[in-house]
Image (cartoon, rainbow, N blue to C red; front, side, top):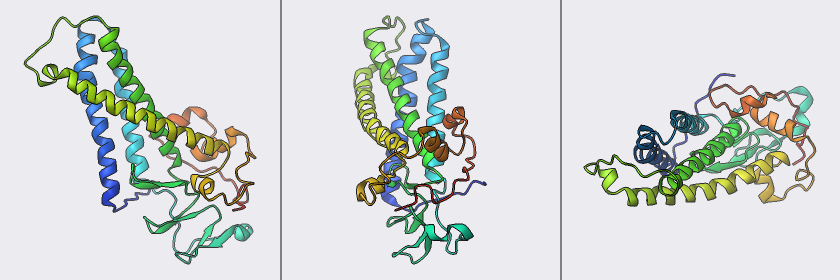
Length: 265
């Protein structure tokens, strides 16, 4: 399946995503400048910790960009309905187009999305069948990167040996306390928010229920898990190889699962 670029024109979404990029840049610049590199130069930490930090940061950024620009599963104007699955399609009462059941019409984007979970302003895109796996990776690596940065911030003041070489001519050194307090505030806020979001996403996949279905309470049958968790995660990530669930650089190939699995909305 080729990469389909999906760009949403939404100033509100641009602002939200810009804020996320700012927090990412702030941490990717400040933490190494104040904590990692100085302690590495004085032999307090091994270089592998710096490599891991930048590795997580790159994976986080790739997941963010790809989740934002990947087509979430927008339905074409004249979809081809498989002959044996017509009973599992329905007519959208907003755009008057046929769609698979469990699809939803996004009022902000103006079209239907297959198995839409929600519209996320933080990635300025819908979270649907084709980019849900990237959104999960974004939550995971954001939580990992934030925890990593907060851990080093704590160790910088309460665990590592004091730095002997400090260049007071540098702005970040003179105002280190204020800068690190701001980094800690953003990190804690991000960690609390993303932990709650990541938890609800994992529960939704395990129970094979989207966020929209949870809010609408449209079918009690969907809220019950009917598949093993390995199966539901494999369907979201497009592969049964668990190691690939953590790789944002690949192309997702959807598993061929008939629509009548959990399509009774």
